[in-house]
Length: 150
Image: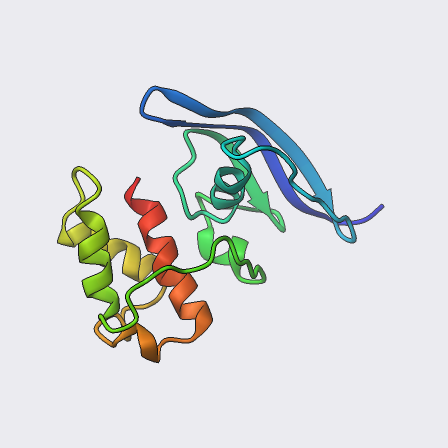
């Protein structure tokens, strides 16, 4: 039998009062290929972001390579690579300036929260550089910071 790579148990997520995901469970084994197919708003991207730890899980559990994403985030994702969305950022601004602009669309996001998510995606050393100087991966990580604002 192949190794269990990903285990999701009863994932649930709400945005406000709207239930986006309800009790999503799946097991992915080494060598498996999975495709998410569904209409806009079905929860495909949200599921992926929960799996990657880019959004907080309402309830349920995610394990990657046997590590719980909540309890041991760094070990869980150390061998994971993902492109979730195309980054749409202002290239002539710094990473921090981009995040400050985007935070205005969210309630209760302050500079402390920006610093927390920047640390989470490991951009502390480059957050004050212009985004035009970032690699694609760095831009994706910066864009994923905003997923943690919701």
